[in-house]
Image (cartoon, rainbow, N blue to C red; front, side):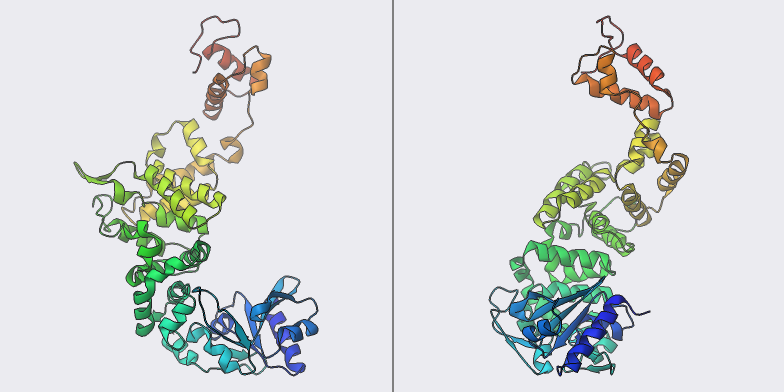
Length: 448
């Protein structure tokens, strides 16, 4: 069944052609269609100038008027329409200083990044226009820069990361000359805004082929530029009794290979869960990484802040990294501690990180299976039941408000989670028995 975006693209192209303009599907949607994949979005390249597009589609939004780009939206679908153009000098390694609108689609294709993204398709005739050898490279599974690779990468240095992403996602090779240019220019990625680097990293991690993507980042020199903390994992040995697969880098690559359509948060947590191991490596009775989870969580915060992730994403990745070693203790946890562990925010991400961590090392999944059983036995209402006692209840019973309240309420919740108290009366009896009563008589220890 044709998607709403595909229908809209076909309608827009047809209307442009009826008005006497050239109009082709362009870029990634053509590449994906020729590969038998469902495009995520649709772009149209046309000889119509921006004013012509707006005249034909009055609701069109000029989202890049300087570059001749209009956005046409209809219900749940959106299509970008761009005027054929050629680009002039690039001075900031990102965008041209100026552009010229063109009538010849060849000139529009010549400014694009890779041959597999330089194909045009007439949606009616289903005939692809190929001025740069894109069809042959699709068939050969090659990512090749259009024209001279260094020029393409100097124009927009983010294209170096895009080459890696396309090769990883599609299972293609990067053409040797194109890859050699990345190797020569990799340090220039530092000039790219952190937000743009972040977005490409997330796509490499979540669109498929994450392991391959990071191997290519490493081979090209890009990894050491944008994630030196991850590059430092290479060659860091691990105790073979727990990690027969090899060093920290190998373990992380295996986990990346195991990702299946992950969220950005889970993917970044997998990438960074052992980032604290290189700086904590030591050899005692065996290889040890004392405190690596705690240090790793701190490092993850610094890395994600540098890459401009949102505060919510940073907090969630920090929790995943900080807690990933706690799984080894779950069978020894008190019932109350275990239930609090199970009710952590986004606990399924914690579980998947742990499963991958074990599956790609010693392959012992006993704790994972133990927690799955506990989840089945303890539905959400048992993991986080309504409070039996509140601060107001303590005040009403004559207890003076203060720091001690947190300890009293925590003790009551522990008892509730462990099944020792079941109602407010039993809970208040526990309070009076364990904590100093309002009249000041000694009975139990008041928490400090």
